[in-house]
Length: 193
Image (tube, rainbow, N blue to C red; front, top):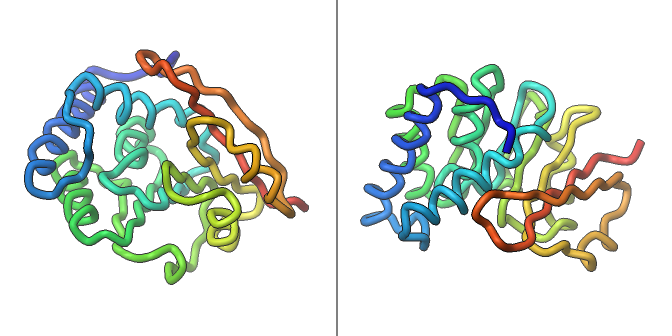
């Protein structure tokens, strides 16, 4: 995937997987049981977005078990990440993982995006399996800094959703993720100026 990493980052990424496995027994954070599949479908899928991040402030909407936010925060210590989810048990896990992984660049927020307010906008807003594109942009555009981008991870290209995007400039990237034999796309959405 052409992503540079240190031995420490790799170790911490594997520690995250261990935490995910441990907490999953009680909190039901993910339906993926296989460690190999977790690497492919959680870690590599999350890190595939890294080259597309913009700026220094990132919002992960509907972070769930901290995906893609926590792996990206491990690999981007110079960026500030806000991980947002409305599920209390998932945000409890993400807070604990943030503490155990020593991630000073992560803020976890238990709230719905509709009611989330901040005095500072974001340069990049991430969404992985969160909502359809019109709903996502409708709730997220107000949180973008000027020139910011929404990065939506999708499987098959959602042609019908793309047709419904108004006042947006859209770029589509096909992602090639090792070990995943399925379509993966990243939709980059900016406000039309």
